[in-house]
Image (cartoon, rainbow, N blue to C red):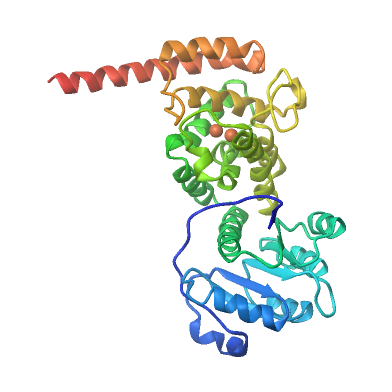
Length: 364
Ligand SMILES: [Fe+2]
Ligand SMILES: [Fe+2]
């Protein structure tokens, strides 16, 4: 199996396996809530093996088609979350099919399977169909199962984001933080600090609304980073860091697929860029980084320092002051940093007071 991208996450309960022959009888299974539906497209013998493989899976509804045309018919009628297609099909190819799915149902995840892994197929899968994974046959059963679950989770996030309701965005941020318990509450606080800074520099109200969304969602690409990497209790090796450095790209892609405002997409994409050009993913410098992303990166680092991480304890107020001062020379926009000083002091003072009150309570 070749990874074009990686998404991991929990399973969701839902019990529906449909066989091709009783597809027409589907209505008897219909419920009020949306079902996590996967459509497999392949030759009949492979579909039988797939149905067998997922027969005891209680987390999804499975639909099958043996040609691209048949698959498109299903796509037009059904709310499909994920399409897994063989490339060599009678009629249109798997890549063509997935490309059409991209237009008809952009929120559906797309995975291409093939027994013939030639470079052109791989490149077309990425560039034309925008498939997020590529599976080489014969597949490994466990990997295929976990890949399908990952695709469903990714699709779930895209679907939620597409509604773009404040509450939905905030709850997605919370779901992402569940994967990374050390950052619980982090996105909320980042949104808060960032919008406070934006107000102080006089950013228009409508841009502050998007900044808040960006704060909530800036780390949504972490949904693609394995929990074992996020919660690794020590310094990460190069492979682990590669995953971490991808999260702005993955997050921006999720936001793009969900049709979010370009300002929000850019905040997610650039929140780890640094003013001196040493950040990631692109190494942008100074004002090449959007203003909102420069604001977010200050709020993000400030909050991270005060949070316990698997690889270090939370910094003290004095340490936070010192690190922020050191970093402000190279990493942050100096004008924004000047404005942020007061906000940082207010937050740190509040924390010290809260700790003192807590201590008093303990002594009593
Ligand atoms: Fe991040
Ligand atoms: Fe963050």
